[in-house]
Length: 227
Image 1 (tube, rainbow, N blue to C red):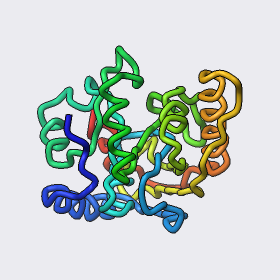
Image 2: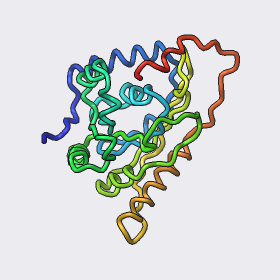
Image 3: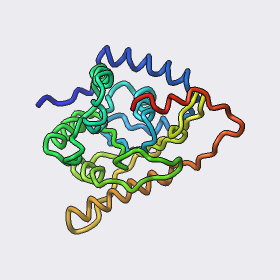
Image 4: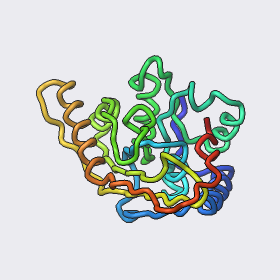
């Protein structure tokens, strides 16, 4: 099994530039904390509200080292056009949802990625949130990967992506990277303690969402774009 490359391919560079143009044309994007991004080898943990979240990371984060997302194969590759886009981006480590994230092949790929200085992106809620400003309980996979790798966690919060329409204001808040401390006598206890620390860090930066008054919600089909 070849290690994931942390360097950007030309198809990715072109797709990233196109994505940046499209997203800035569709939405008003406000970003806070870009200077908090570590130079390499971190685990990005964010809340998840819609398809826009990983694409925002794609256009906002440095082109190198590349961010690879943990993604359920059944959801991401369920359409031919989705598979084509992923072929251009090549930015996912796939897992079978029925088996969970902690699979031998997944663990090996994640370990190789982080050892090479790459960035792992996880939406640790394990699903898409239905309400702005709320966080679902985190799955323990984030605690496992953090404990095994010893890499810093970079919390990132999205606000405004749950309901999308033309010129919607979207906020992206990037917190400070930290290395969680493993607490507890057993491996399971340590994973739980790290997961709790990541959840606390996310809640600390998750902003209160306020609906824009008097806005005309045009192009609401954007919500269904990647379903």
